[in-house]
Length: 171
Image 1: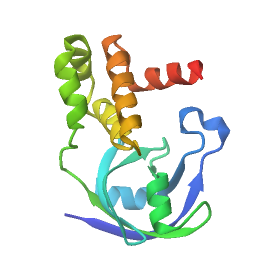
Image 2: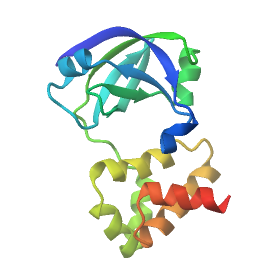
Image 3: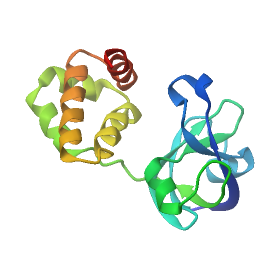
């Protein structure tokens, strides 16, 4: 399995980026993404490390110019103690493993055939959005709230982005 190593700088999207506004990320130059996954233009998962902090099941997202970005969530930034403008060392390789879906979400989907049917009609990456969002909850109460929101949205045939937009409107 090919791995790439290089240094890059943490960046942050401004407010003009729509759903990506405020995201922290690193840019993966095309020469490295081509080494990892030649001729790939769609998102794919990688594993490896950011400044020696291990990462698993992390997506590289195309930026439209042939390069990719890798979002850096707060948990990773806190672990590596880095912010915007700081340099990090990346070691990445393609991750071919299946993403494990949240077991509590799956159990609730079995109890709601409408939500479950819509969930399984979504692409695997869109199913993963729901699961990761639930997995990233810091408390059990937040996790339960997110599962309830997901089941409600899925039973109404909504995808993850539509659910989040509706949630923002209600705030």
